Image (cartoon, rainbow, N blue to C red; front, side, top):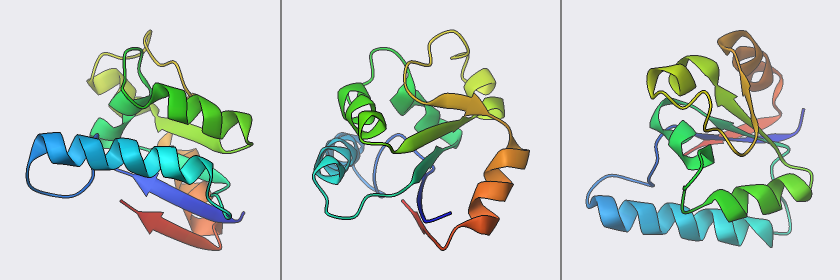
Length: 111
């Protein structure tokens, strides 16, 4: 494994929700053109909403996938938010795989 980015919320940082959503949208858009991209992005908790139909960042996630970045979504979280039939980016997985990805990663950054 190489680099992994873990996103655990549908916005970036604490504070104003609107600002947090803007920051997340900008981060993912800039990640597309970054010189070094992660091999995998892990989405869990409310971050799975980012991969659902209608998400403001869906286009960025699709672009990242097209560049070879694998996006995995926590299945428990997807089910919790009722998004099982709405996930449109990445793939749904389980905690066993998420643990494997994180423990084998050379480096992991959590947002």
